[in-house]
Image (cartoon, rainbow, N blue to C red):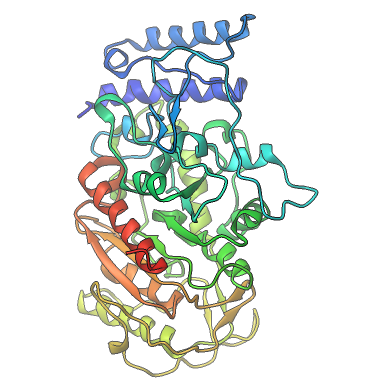
Length: 459
């Protein structure tokens, strides 16, 4: 376990590496070995990266990168990015993935391979695709004919490498998701939001809807004709709902399974579970002088996307009413004051500005409250301006047993997004278990794989 001072040094290296990646896009950059880095002074770390910057400006004969990666047939790269776990002690986000540390003979850099889209259209941009999905090559899951594509969304303050990286050296943490993808011909497309790594200088999105609208044209051609699942963590979870809605008319039916660990996207702020960052088990080093100045804008921008999420439901069906009642029953049983609304959702309104209709009076007994399957199976009639809801694919929702903020009652209402089976599964970790507990992360990813296999009948 890294001490706070050691984590600070690793974080500093990541920040300096980000700046290099921004100035020299496409270059494979190697950070100092962590075993040495944690013993270096801040001056030595800065000097190392300044020398690296100077070396990047010098002409080189036949070598376009400092390190190289060799991929076995279908097995992925021998070494992966260092990833988010590198700089977290008891927990916390990182600013960017660290560079590859294979230590093998350098070779000319290869471009990130983007799978050929089914219907690319005249405006399809491979460079734009690479910005959104920079970890595809490192994940070792790229394939020309995938049986399935998994679209992954990272959490606030983190980066796509929380899905595409297994770390290196002492930090290496094998990923059941990546192993399954490589074995089964599944392509993992992990989304990289603006504000981090090579996208650090890009404007942050103001809402989940805006993020989804920007992502949809890039993503759509790769989903048509190929079964698709979604994996998301924390505040990113609301994002998949918009593109999923838009694709519901053309994507293969019943092909998706969503995994989440976040409060339902339209809960009222009166719940008060997000009033400050320390309650999310973030590493205290993030709040230290020099670190907070870097993380505060990123965390604020990411959290704003969640806070500004809007969901307009034209018709309230019985299933959603049951899930809403389940939530209230569980919250009230824990002594939580009943909220006056559910965020910015309008239940029963035919259009924005229209008065909401009365909720359908049903009981909560038709929805599973603890790990079984739920869903009444009725078609309802609930729609919104993004497409048809609820979806027809199953959803598995995870929550941390030691999470101080997001307990089971705040996760349970995701059942309202589907008419298919819904499952709730606890994970033995706090809110940031993918970053600070390897056993919990492994259990979570293995649970996600199981959810995908059940949804596709591969089990």
